[in-house]
Length: 326
Image: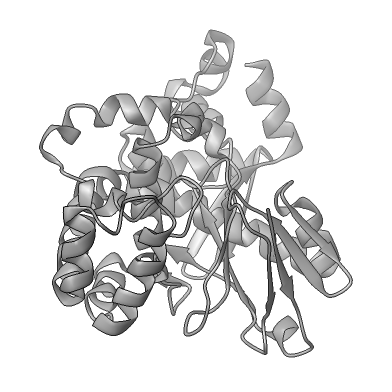
């Protein structure tokens, strides 16, 4: 059912993007529990199989219904464009117990019998203790599921924001929302988000604007919501997920032309990336990757642009053609 976000003049001035390690952690936990999210993430799931043996995620899954309400405080919108996980976790730990209890009760009410279960009753009776437990489980999930791959994930998410920022500058909101995701549409002054929830919702943004949060693990869904005190937020799948977990393949002809490592760098740029992320993905030294990127850029196969404190590289049309032919 749709969530309709009504924009006023002030809301148009408060549209922002951010990356959230906390939200990625919770969406990864949700992905483990939902087969319809596996798809692109199957290679990652295979790698996680052994690591999951000692990881009990039951406290989190209790508040992650397939199509119902998840407490907003679990994935609260980040206050800065790229917040560190420790910073976000500290904010989660500091959640007001009364707010936590209200949001947990709302989540449990949408699942028959959940509020009367032993875990449900315990959480509602001691919301401060529940917040502490959920934060502890979240931290363990982060260290097991996300932290080892965070440089790769963060690079993809920051590249997505850079791409969408250019799109917004070129085509305005109409151009941005027309291409952001098939389940998002813009008409007049309203953004319609078709989610998996079983109820329709109209929300006036009232000057709060909206946060656009690209995600790897939310695929194929789009999530919206966040009532006050949270800023309204839309989580949507980032570009480049299809090649995230696959190792780049280079044909023998391309390797003979460019050299094995340089061909691997070109093949790996199926989405804009940083030197660090490419080095992590290819298991090469960052200094070596930097040299290869410079040579490929000088040859007209790549372009580079600065995004914040990072430099993102992507293939030119010539580079795309050569990588495909290779």
